Structure formats: C-alpha cells, structure tokens
Length: 87
Image 1 (cartoon, one colour):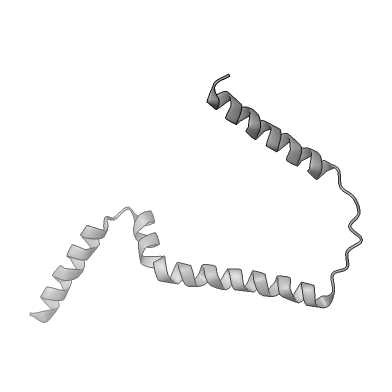
Image 2 (tube, rainbow, N blue to C red; image 1 turned 120 degrees about the vertical axis):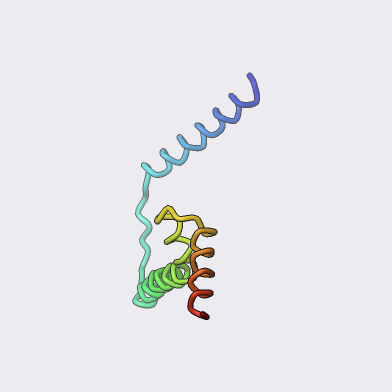
C-alpha cells in the first residue's frame, strides 16, 4: 500500500470511530447551574462583539472585495479628488 492509501485509511478509521462514539451516548448526570448559563451567554456576546469589531476594522477591504473595484483604482480616484479639492 502506498502512503496515500494508508493516510486515507487512517482518516476513515478516525471518522468511523467518531461516528460510533457519537451514536453511543450515556447519560452524564450533569448539573448546569445559573453561573454556567451566564458564562455561556457571556461567551456568545463576546463572540458577537469580536465579529463586529473585526468587521469594522476590515470593512473597507470587504467592501472592495465584493464591489469588484481594485484598491489601486479607488486610491487613484481619492488622490485625484483630493488634488481637485485643493485647487
């Protein structure tokens, strides 16, 4: 067997093992107190805030990517408008 076949075989074994362990579940008898719920809510709010800040920081690049304009075109237009403003 070649190295590629061994790697694919190992990946398949890992996947099958995960599926089996996912299907065989036992009761956990766990208790989630209000503090645990609060922690989960804080994590979700923090993740939403992080995504918002990241979007704010990279909004110009994201907008350029979806608008189809090249950044050099936008930069040349902004420098031209700045030079006409000065005159």
